[in-house]
Figure (cartoon, rainbow, N blue to C red):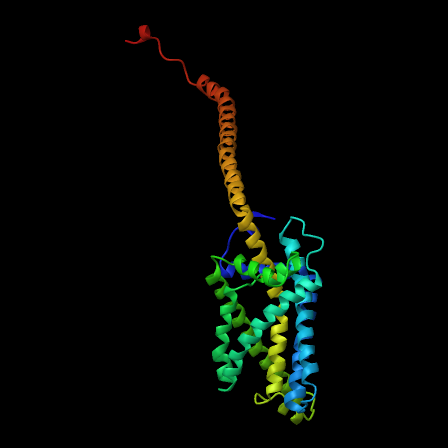
Length: 326
């Protein structure tokens, strides 16, 4: 781990560090997070379709169990990606029995209850229409002040359940404002991606109509902004695409907490100061060597020019004898 990875950073630096992890890891590390988010998104969309579109009411207990199971699968797979990102940042070995499914299940159930409580804000906002949902979305940024490292902690340590969640809450002590700002930036990115995906969908419909000559009346109605199911599908895709970044952010938060707890950031700062000081002492030596080489070159040039000047002086006539003067 380098000193840059150990140094504390702000919200922008935290997101930049997470994006670097995602970019360097590629699909090998991000694939599990995408599959976990995709599983949960598909189940939630299926439940909404059966409940609101088809009007199925008799399968509610089974559908509720499917949602809980999908949330657990999401925590397990995103935790696997987060563990891979932790290994890329953290050189110390992790416990072999860390990230046990039962421990991850207990931790994810508690966080699921918190997400369920926060989701009532969206329910209240939906009473005002799409604008109300956007109006209440920024309140979700407050979640960044609580336990952003819970996924990585559940995947990289033995403890689970309430103890793991409380430890994740303590991990972010002193940096809760930074966590809120980071979560607000993530939400802004999700909203921006959501708008871009809607725009791309509309462009595809126009291309189908203009160039291929297809009858897209049904598709046009399907992609209408009044179609809540389509809006939810596009929103789910935007959330799923951000899952690897959330795994990397959780890994970064957990590693930062370990660094502060063990004082590694201070040690890295001291090492950097020592290397800078040693480099400063070495600089005059290099300058002195350059000066000596310049002096030697000037001396050699003077020695080469000295014989030429003496020969030039021999060409002048000798001075006259004073006795020969009148």
